Amino acid sequence: MLLSTAIYIIGDLMIYFGSAFPVVLIAGLAVTGLGIYGIFGTTFAIQPDVIDYSEYQKKRSISGMIAAFQGFSVKLSMGLASALIGIFLKMGGYVPNATQTPTALKYIEASFIWIPMLICLLIGITTCFYKLDQQREKMSIELERRRQIFNSQSAETV
Image (tube, rainbow, N blue to C red; front, side, top):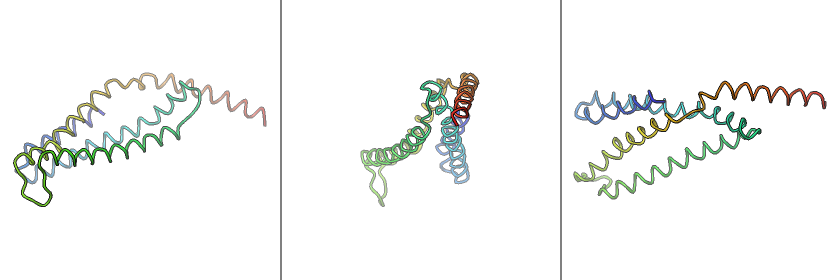
C-alpha cells in the first residue's frame, strides 16, 4: 500500500510540474492510475483479513455483511466526494463552459492534485497502523482448528 501511495503522489507531482508538456501530463495521469489501482486492489485484498479477524474475535462469520458494508462505503464515498468537489469548485467561482478565473483555476488544481495527494498521504499513514499481517498466521491456525471441530461435530450428527 505504501508503494502505491508513493506511486500516486509521484504521478500527481508529474502532472503539476509537467502540465506544460503534454507527454509528461499524460504520463503523470498513467502513473496516478497505477497508484490508485494499487490502493484499490489492496483494500480488496485486506477484506478477507478483516473477515477472518471478525470471525476470530466474534466466533462467527459475517463475511456477507462485511462485503456489503465495503461496497456500500465505496459507493457512498464516491457520491460524497463528487458532491464535495462540486461544492468546493463552486466556492472557488467555477463556472461551467466559461473561461475560469485565476481563483477558480486554483480550486480546480486543489481538487485534482493537492486534495487527492493529501488523502493519499493519509491513507499511507493509516496503513502503518494495520496490524493484522502480524496476526494472520495465528488467526488462520485457530480458525482452521475451529472449522475442523465444527466439521467433525457436523459429521457426527448426520
